[in-house]
Length: 121
Image (cartoon, rainbow, N blue to C red; front, top):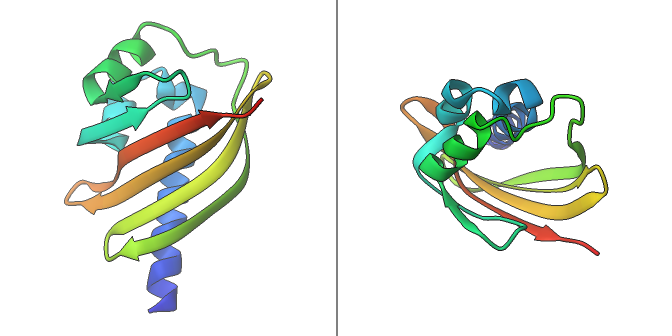
């Protein structure tokens, strides 16, 4: 059972890291493969996002491939079968935030269901 939980956490971390990859973020098709259709985000900006609004922003060229996000302190916990909660810290050119994501297993694989970012002064 512990191996199964560790596998789920590692799969969610791999999917999260893919979503943070500038090449993936610049592709609406790749981003949509990782976002649950019911996705919601409370962004560090204070804005509420859904899958459609995130895809609009990423397809508008808002991602700088020359400045990947630095990720530290990534950890995860299985909350229930098929549900993983990840927490981590990001630094994007001095814009620092604690982040929290909920991933759920679907028939199409692991997809992000919820995300929240909280800026750190």
